[in-house]
Image 1 (cartoon, rainbow, N blue to C red):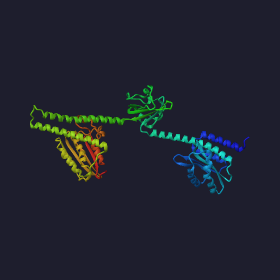
Image 2: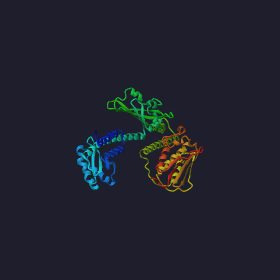
Image 3: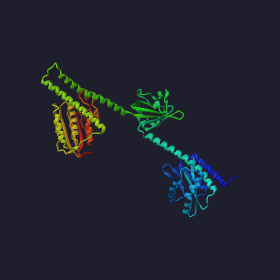
Image 4: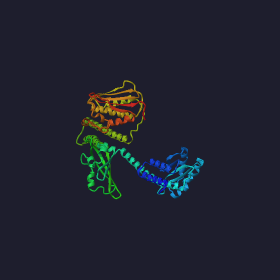
Length: 519
């Protein structure tokens, strides 16, 4: 029959073994192992230190030891090599660290024993036990060695589990924060995971679609560009491990049925034996790309039409004047030349505006700021534009002197010219009033007319590039760039521009410029 202490040793070792299979919380596991070690060896104090990758040695659990002792001991672990023969480790390193030091600080009252925690020749940590007076026997060291072996396995298991948990949390964080919608599908096209962005794009709650078929959630409003996933899988996709599949079309949102343009990329995850494990699905809202394509189409349409018209007129009048079979009187020649000049000016204005848009998209406007008197710029624009119309009377309304501002004279001139030109173009006649007043740190300038005004449905878009209302497109010529450029110039000066129109009282557009330049 085994002696009592042997039975206790066996029971403790069995408890450690059970703990290895049950406990994956590293700190709790280490606390229990240290507690058992102290009880088994009648120790009064102890500690377990682990080697933390990229951080060095850290004491994870301790009991019965003063903080000053721990602070001294922790840097001493740097002497411990990362790889060591378990049979030689205790003699070469552990006793060197603790032996003399423990005796000195305790005046011979404490003795110590320490062993490494080693798995596969790699040192994961060390375990120390201290007790008063009684030296540790060979049996004590053998028992602690058994604990150390068990603890090393436990540490490795718990660290692997912690690493898996960290990787899982990191992956969840990446998925949840991704701007694109992400689905993880099983090999039979069931939804295994969905992130919040996909829920927003598809109009669903991510948690409610887990386990549902892909085709039940991904429904196209009309046949998409590319082969749908279910058809591709039926045809044998994927034939190679990196054979991604791309489909683009209008996805029907579940919550309201409104289609949203999306591009979906399917990437297979293949096992080492060639079996399909998962399909990683990325869903991107391509509304902005569609809008960009529409802007591009609008640009080509507008430019081709607006540039073609003056060129055709110029060519027509020149061809007429050059006819050999006709002799034109001076009045007809002058009228023809005036049309040619006007159309050439209009063509030049279109080209300059397009160049401005290109510069703006590239790196903004390069402003040449100088001290200017805004009232002088306003009067100059009014006088010049008055020569362009006999149906309108342009009035300058500046009740008080305006302060000098720092701005680009030619660009501010361009803003005012665009606003007055629009007023002339869209108002059939009447007064065009340019008013300005100093208010606080800003000068507010407004251009108003007595025309039909701006339709409230068009108001949110009048400063957009190439935008022209349906009625304006039918009645007047233009590329839809004047107000877009005016807004860009004003904002480049640190100001802002807005519509200040009352229904039935014509159009009124205002902008403010800071008295002190904002660079």
